[in-house]
Image (tube, rainbow, N blue to C red; front, side, top):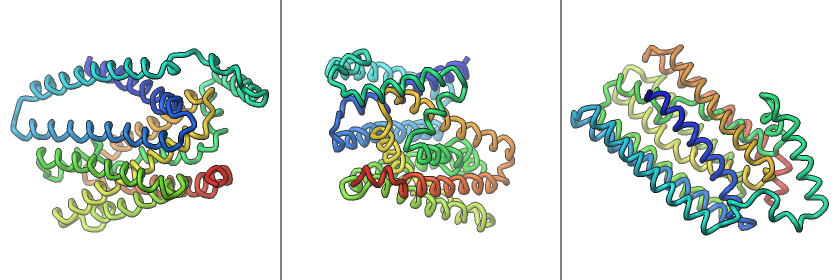
Length: 338
């Protein structure tokens, strides 16, 4: 029952993320690019603060030998409270910006003939391809951001993160639960630093530059982690320090890259296919996330964790190359920034 309910939670979270991040924010911002960037940063910061507090609290409870049932009840209560707060906030947003609840086409009276033709073409594509399993991806890979989005999805193949596989590995290496909560909280703190870095950089550099530099920074940081798991496995303390240091620092690049890819998607994808593109991006993210868990099952021996690290490291390098080719050197994005 818990697994089934978790599946429904994940599905609702995906629908909420696609509608809010890919559509609502763009509608509210209008043509104000600076406001769009500020909204994206604030949304990520709220998300990261919540993700920073929850692991630290859970780690504290578990580290003090509390019963697991008590911890589950406490975290479930917090989830219910957060749902009520989110519902109240969404209702308030709809009352402030009624355009969000308007039917598509209510404000299209002043469209030019060219815009109407483009909309009709997108609608025709959507209806023709939606009947097939790959229809969404056909539309997705017609977008300018497709290579950058594919690179971003590949980042989900990386196990050197604060996810469950690395958490299990750190426990196997002897890291205490209380220390593990601190590590996960520190990862989210550096994620906040990443959002701040993006806010600073977006005022000075082009988004395509931020995209490539942030991914390159991830490659650099994760190189340290690979050294900790592959080259110095015999010294437990040094190995753990290098692994954790690289992972924590890489969160700066990860969240800066997340914001840059999302904003490029918001600015380049037509509103009529925004939901299809957002759904396809989310499904690709989920696919590579599932793949990295499948690899974790195949290489289930903790002593083989370095193999998973090398696979994830290769995926991050591939993502960097895709973003370099599909975003930085893309004439479409170069012209957009001029």
